[in-house]
Image 1 (cartoon, protein in one colour):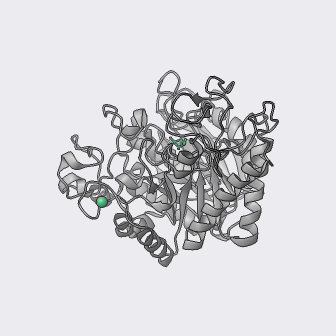
Image 2: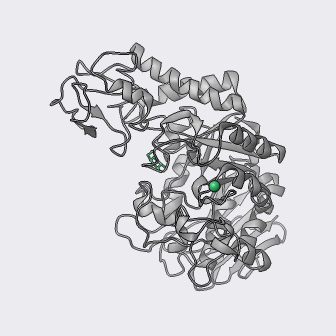
Length: 516
Ligand code: GLC
Ligand code: CA
């Protein structure tokens, strides 16, 4: 386990929209460099940056055309190395986004693979043996190449799947995982990882980490074997490099070699901590004041993954990401404060999506940009201050990557810095508590103290710290057993909380941290 993960708190940057340093309307590496001190002061000491490689941007850069070259709009490879250096100079770390499952249909490998004549890339992607032979159960495209075959997709039409083989090949065109062509794909992936690790990045967030081997079994036996091989490479040659998977199955991802896996609130597990229910759109987010739900909806699922993996890896909570609707679409400022206080005092490494620290709003009316669709509304420019374009860019507003939210009372960093009760200052205060107390750096020490069916208030413990939360609009009382031998000291509160006669009284919409 890389040592720096012990107390890492991540800030996710969507580079297009964070800070534009040269006035062309789009964020860039230099802009990020200029804001590193801001990120550090916020209390985040690590960064995950979404894909920044050369791309036709049909899926915001998740359609990679050249893994070893940065997109010009963000800067050169040298500029990115400078970003790594500036990050390290501040004692921080940075993960790039690794897209192992697919490339852009414009990647040179795919152009070669599409040719009629057999060549070294023919089997880099998955093709059937005939133009009218569709691969059963797999998304695919026919009729676009001179090659006589149909190819498999991983996500959008622009993203053909790389060939890591089939767990149990059944058709002549399906390769086994250890076919030389599939080994070559694996080696190409390792080569890309070494390329950026040698330049100074600190690891990767891995996109669709479960998607490598096709017709894999329920336990993802094939895909896990590949990740274990990759982890071995890191352990041998890059022991301080970290991997976090977009998977949401820590019991598979962590034994497979990931140091961290994301707990994704939106993948249909139904607990909707911060988010709206994706299926029916209902606002039943747990932290919503009027919700009737118990924290057990979340804990029942989360604790299964956590308990099984806590000694080996981190199961990480997020405020949101570039794929989710912003939590502020479901929760008001007070609700967000409680939600973040919870996220940031839980085990694992928290991930804060840019702009969530000020409650940036979800822009539901925007037309899709770069394959974003409903995700576009969560990808608008960061709001720094009340100058032109909220300080994001000096470009004309029509030239911006996406419009800045200039609706009345739009949140900005500058305004919230001045307000001691702002969401931004709550984030800072909680992250400070997390940073300064060792108990929050020990992954295995979570105990649930109080969590009941049909009750809203709940409590949990990490070492000497007790956290209590009452998201409801009514006062609540919590009694924990065994009783405490001394009076706990309240070190932080949102709303009002008190300890009297062995009971904790939690005012409406409150959160408190006690030390014993
Ligand atoms: C992941 C990314 C998402 C992207 C998809 C395909 O889910 O987070 O943004 O569109 O993979 O690469
Ligand atoms: Ca720019």
